[in-house]
Amino acid sequence: MKKLLIPFIALLFILSACNSKPAETSSSNAGTTETPKAEQTETAAGTITYESENGPIEVPANPQRVIVLSAFTGNLIALNVNLVGVDSWSKNNPAFADKIKDAMEVSDESLEKIIELDPDLIIGLSNIKNVDKLKEIAPTVTYTYNKVDYLTQHLEIGKLVNKEKEAQAWIDDFKQRAQKAGEDIRAKIGEDATVSVIENFEKQIYVFGDNWGRGTEILYGEMKLKMPEKVKEMALKDGYYALSAEVLPEFAGDYVIFSKTPGADSSFQETETYKQIPAVKNGHVFEADATRFYFNDATTLDYQLDFFIEHFLGN
Image (cartoon, rainbow, N blue to C red; front, top):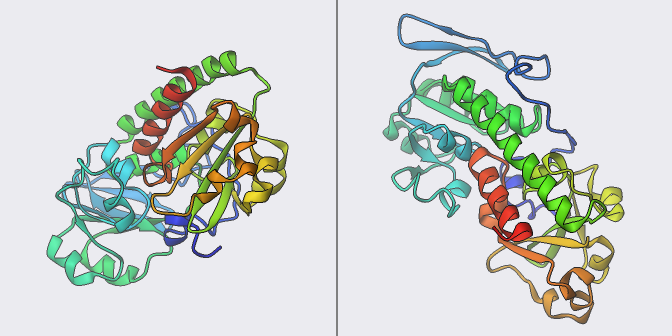
């Protein structure tokens, strides 16, 4: 189990047991108490004071050399922020490749490399190492995964890099697009049709709840598609559930999104047990590249939404 958690274990995405629901993030409530207080005060030195979850911190008003050590690369790409260093999961994500081709792969332990990159802002999850040393290099802001919902997190990143309006505009547009697509999909497949999200990693199969990336926030949150009862029972609390190929039919919905890990064992697809699943027999299994599908940042969410529209609606 410790190996699963794909980027999420490496990034603390996996060990969070919090089952947060997307907040209604809009212009009218973006400053509610559910979000970290993030009022920004501009200073004469071209900086702003960002109210992070750890207190106020002075950061560049227009950061030009940002390093991301975990999780938030896709948010910054969506906000057109220049990245000079990113974590290995981001560097290996084909959906990010064109935007970060010049960024160096770094980690929270490659301090010399980070110094050479001369960052003006460093961002990561709250479990990164060497935070005190990183703060000596550049202003360093960390976030606790799942402390706020995925859309509020994008808004917080926008506030941090002084692009709150752009972040809010993306959120409003995304919610409208996702909800409209959900209406169209439910009209096509039926209001009672169920959808499962599974993933293979090494020799294990996982099914996901409603807030663990892989498009789950879109399908179950914005689109209001239904989750099979067995998935509700076993995966909602922790966000994911490991299962065997033999019991997969119990968790398979009328439609299955298969976030397929390149190189991982997928031999279960050749078994009669798998082939007899109604979604398989009906051609209702939609395979996605897991390396593009893991996260719930703005860039990945756009990709996931386009994937669902294409596969459910054929356009």
